[in-house]
Length: 455
Image (tube, rainbow, N blue to C red; front, side, top):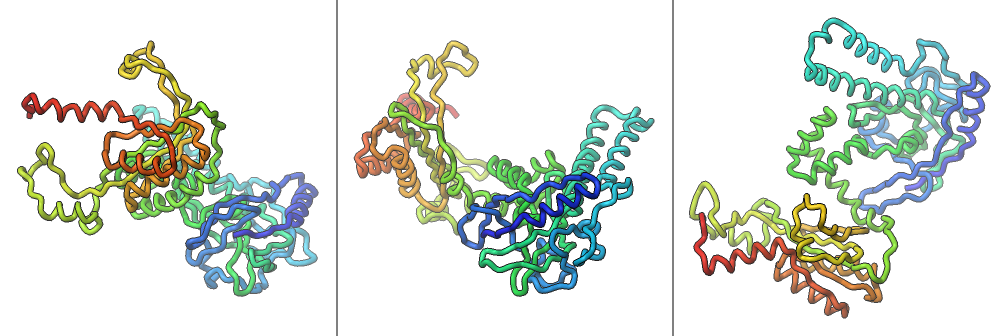
């Protein structure tokens, strides 16, 4: 969704600030935001703003669910709200633009300074001298985070004080939002803790409010910051959501709920295809190898979500022991997630000694390095669909089939058959390589034909 903003009001406010004391305000910048509507595509061309969401980003005191209407509290063009957007009488036509006082009492960072002096006072006092280094670490960990949170909050308050009304604001339907109200506040959960963002609301009767302040900060529609979203995506992919919760709390002190983590991870996953469509890749040559690799990963599922064959096996299979599984037994609770990766690499000649060398050996030749990785995975689609998607990406990179193609697998016969089918369909000459580590595992099966298995 795109909104158009003229900069005349911001320029006039900057000139007013220079006349009133030389304080130069930051110019209004055009921000590119990744807006995703309910099932809509991402739009990132031109200046963009978020629309207000009822009970989420609006001050509840407005009482109108974020729908604009003409208001006597509207600010005149090119002016800042008195005291920021935190209350006070609005500027009206004919009055002088408001200028923040330059006294210690109006210092927007006074709260941060008080916290900092409190930490310094503690460290220089008698109490701190009797603490061990671990006790000092724990104390500064908590107070340091609060100081950073307050610095963040004070900066946001300074922005609200300096926010200048834009000359014109139009939404995607080319409708003007001429009425402006101050004091609209929303919450933001950051890696330092909770902060509040106060900004001007641009209103039009029957339309949702628009917020230039949200665009300048590139705020998400939901409450969680991009920093928390990144941590949720990283930690959520490493293990369970409970483990992700604990990891985020250890590193930031912020406690996210399990359902919140699940929702953040799901939202991050919706941008995977868009990310790869816009990602820049290094240039390749005709001698670079094009590699396709496929694998499967069993994921524990609820009984109703198992595929037909696995569900029937789970109902009919009995295990030898109640406490653990014996050799060859399965819990029959998993559904295979299919994964594929496509990447480019420059071939590196290596000997068997290089391949089998230990990680600490300095004489071995380093292996090839993967470039421009493209990955896909699905627990809903089967291997046929996922491998087909990998071949489509490979053909996009080498439509003339001029480069050597290699498929790296772990020996799964179904995956190998699907690779051969897709290659024959496209007339591609592809070399299939089985991972050595998995080859060794298959050799154990042959060895047990001649030797008794050890328990």
